[in-house]
Length: 219
Image 1: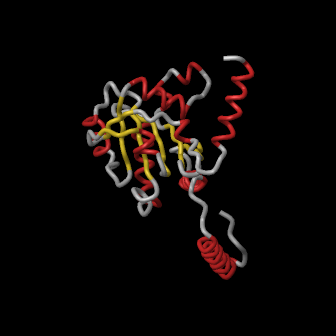
Image 2: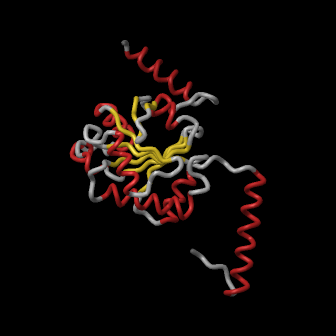
Image 3: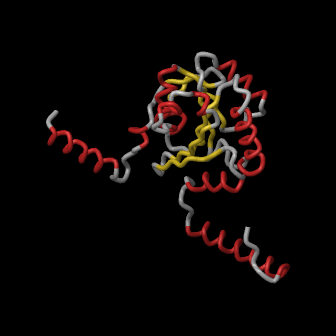
């Protein structure tokens, strides 16, 4: 391809992904074939990501350090703050870093062991090439030592909202407030009525704090 044709093509691609109604994520996220902890075949983009807000995490069932700790953290967050949303407008997808070891039965056993068989939470395994492709897409550090070491990606997390074309990095071991903030950054925009309700709730909280403390608390 000639240089002029190459840059012309890039310009056309850039213009097309910015048009309303053009889904950019479909071009960025491989639609690879996986199996769930229930041994159900799914396509990663079409069935797991498309039109959804999803927390994507890396793990493997035999891990004894970061993976169970990250899973426990997300189970806690589910019960503390996310239960009303999970399986409705928020989902979690765990991808095995060691698919050659983690068949659906192993993932199911891991999820049961850690209390993670919860609504909207899916554990995935598949072909090694496909897993690595997704890992590089989501969690590349552009450092050969880190990118080739699968164990260094245990517990890695991204929050993706396909409808908004937005994804952000999150740390499973951050504070609850920080994790909820990262998830909220990918939430759909609120309606005017919802924003007004939030403002009224905040004003009521401020007034209660002033009544009790004489000033507004900062947390």
